[in-house]
Image (cartoon, rainbow, N blue to C red; front, side, top):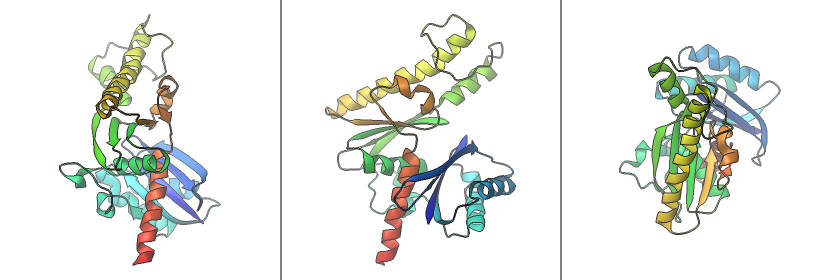
Length: 256
């Protein structure tokens, strides 16, 4: 029997089907749909699960407008109780924010994925619609983080607010100093993100004055990970975190 881990961000849904040992069996990435929720996600889940039998699923969703409806779609189609991740479930996870309940499901899941696999302190860089940098200290406490516009937002903003510029693909530029409008824009967005992230993380590392595990994840991380040589690239970090959280919840339920 298998567990389906689902991460819904503002731009993409990324799902990984795992066996009872945490091995990855199948994965899927699709655009996040915010309008035709029921037919869109019903078709996806029915197509994705052909030939597989699952015991349950766990969902991380950062799109409040569709969270309840999507969760119900998965429950109905998979005929499972399911787990909707939020801070309400995380009794033993210490979050050093002014309001710990504000911590999003994506931050929770990446934190647990990182704490399971890497030594602390840990810096996690999750590159999605937003660039999210979070810090786990030596006590496995969530210290805080940084949120900035992601590469997709920067690209869209330039294209919409400076209409005479060309539309571009987000590809790693071959040069730092561009020789065309496209190269200049690609370098500005992509190299700008690389050096910004590296600089911020270096400062955090200096503040701790010790070795820090630096983990890169998220959809846009696929574009830059080869340039981020001092980071460990793990595109499955959030889903691995969902798997670990589910195991904890199952243990808590069985001990009651």
